[in-house]
Length: 250
Image 1 (cartoon, rainbow, N blue to C red):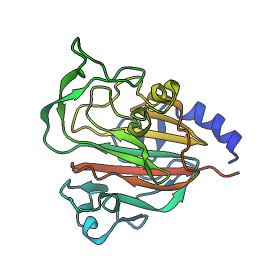
Image 2: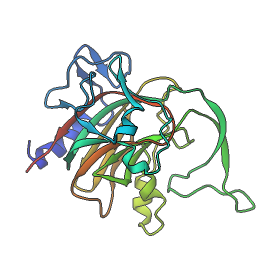
Image 3: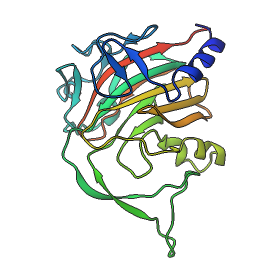
Image 4: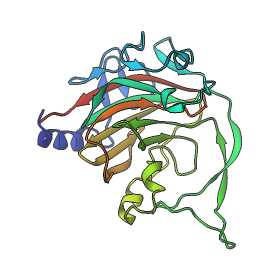
């Protein structure tokens, strides 16, 4: 598929719509898919990590069972970049589908409140406002080999889909920081499966979470043209399943 055709296809097919494949409905988290959607390939076949790489110690903590990738959150090696789960192949323009959930116990924590423009909300004394939430972990998907272009999965009030590396970069234009800030909190209750669709074309990123558009054509200035994908080790248990990818050439 050519880039121009893909842009039109992505805009009409992935923004807030259900994706049907196998015996399940992608975006509901209700059923495990039996095969990739048309035009997509499995980045995880439910059986092994042959499409992924990590150092030998890290592999002890990324375990496959029952059709899921289960990270136990216990890998605290000295070089965390090597402890993530990296795709063997590199990718440029793509659409990535992935289901994820935090299986660990939740605890009440306070996290900063983020405004729609990407700034932190401040109280009357100038300190960052915080909100109590139930937190079970933090992770994300690295795009094009970089943590700066990571799509977040976390428990902060703003919701998942945020691109922390760009939102916190005060050198970026206001429209960039606002663009990578989720427009809605679309996460399901802790312990439930979330379904995310990430579309990256050129330096533009769109993210839908549980069929809700949270990031729409946000610009990531300076992002690399290609690179591996990573599932992040943030030191918290997380599970992944139904990982499918479609690339764009030309």
